[in-house]
Image (tube, rainbow, N blue to C red):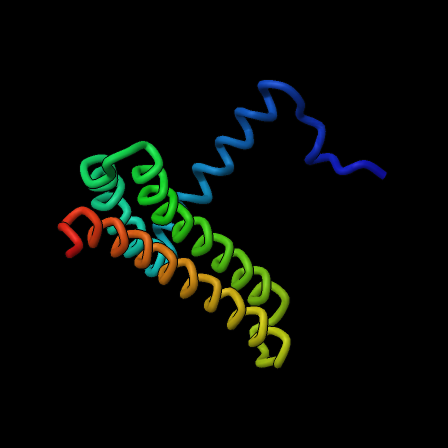
Length: 127
């Protein structure tokens, strides 16, 4: 039995995938406080990465670390939505899944901070 939602190919698939992706970003913005906060910070940090980075590699590291936070936050929100879809009942496995997602967001934030602090330290003239 084939999935009726998997029938699109070529440009039609790309257009529909883009539509769903943009809808997901809009939904995350409208429903997820953490995503809204991180996206607002990203709106400031992404242009700053172009100014702050001395090379293409530095710009890529700065911007990539910011985008990684947004990506991990979206995945965490997806896990939480899937768990809540199954049940709001407290369960050890549900808690574990949500805590793992939250830990992933924390690690992405720490990685982002370390990249930015390392570049700033280098840029501001390490002794």
